Image 1 (cartoon, rainbow, N blue to C red):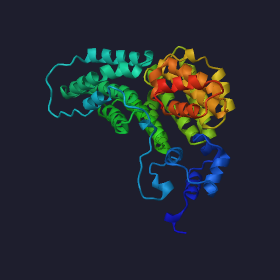
Image 2: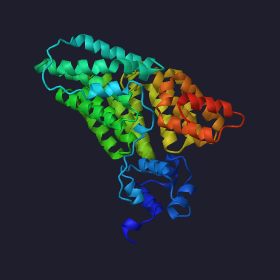
Image 3: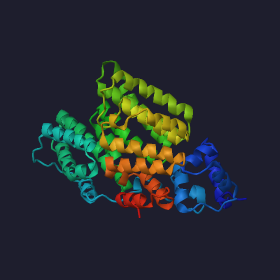
Image 4: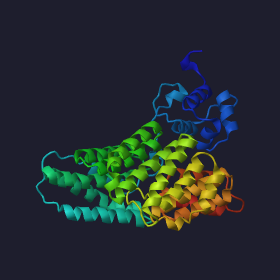
Length: 405
């Protein structure tokens, strides 16, 4: 049989074997059983629909659906495009695309700009409606930070580039999970580039952290791991005399590798990187929190839950959930995202009533996190189709608030 004539099930099996992934792991990543996947691969079940093929391709790290369908039609895979468009998205896009090559002589107070960026990060972490709060001030921050770079030279321009890199890192959180995946790549690339042009190891590493998120969520796992390694390598030679935030960024990058290996179904590597990152968090102490990544002891415990979920070890995941009080997570959006992960663990246990309870709590904690999170929307869809006994009205109300019809 010609390769182009291979059945879709055979293509899925071959891609899974090339990735070194077992049936239970791949099936778990798409919320199906190993028996279901075996039936698809063997041709006993009909070809999955486009939505499921997209999830399989994402889980396998495939960016072109033609590798599974054989139809020669390229389809971009990204969980960053699953949510609705936020009201300020067009204004943020316009600010990002406002290219001006000539110098702008209007003054920009760099110290004040730094203060505005710090305040914006505080808003991002403290607000349940964080996307709306950040979206209101982000266009102005972007334009002013870009102008600060254009209007300076020498060492002052390097300082301005550090600030602009931080603005792009903040923008990365805003544009994620909206129907504008091109902006995710744009701000991630610019954050890294500004760090490089500033010749600042910390800014480069922080930009790499943002890029790792985009790479992993689009299924480009090996690239994500490589970028995380490179980002940490910028800082590791200086750690003996470095600030806590430099150590925190290295820990955050190692934690990202743990999450990426878990997404790949690699249990040993995932936990090895988790332990390395946890040791850094332990030494930094219980009161430390990295502003950009939220890296901390509490987040490492939350990551232990995520590893269990992605490795399809829901018992371990729920044990990790019971050992962490979500209120220990200072960042309100990150706390909500942790609760979404808890809901995923209960979904793996087929405990739909608990899924509803936890997902509703996540929505109350930070509505905009749930509304724009692909996993939360998927869970809400499943609840809508199969609501827990006696909870149809509660599910309908949750779906309305999340924006799932």
